[in-house]
Length: 101
Image 1 (cartoon, rainbow, N blue to C red):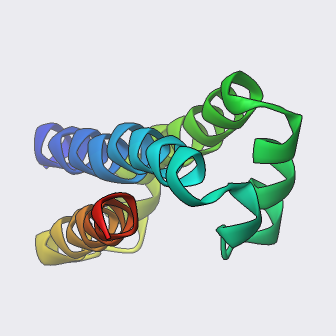
Image 2: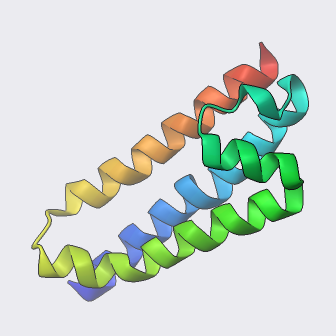
């Protein structure tokens, strides 16, 4: 079960971390950081792209590091991790719509 949970964590990190951070930066470049819906990320973007990306990846990384233990302790079904990763991919897709709109 642990191996599966690590795969879930990797998928969550990829979508909520890497994809979201990259597409958030692209969207901020396209329309400005003021358009960011998340006030914390909006403030990070005001500090610069690098601090925003580092902070986003650090927070998501910490959460993903805890995911295998937390999900196993809660006996969360595997589809929960896939669902969380899918939501991250959807957020990245919306960011891309902002970029190309």
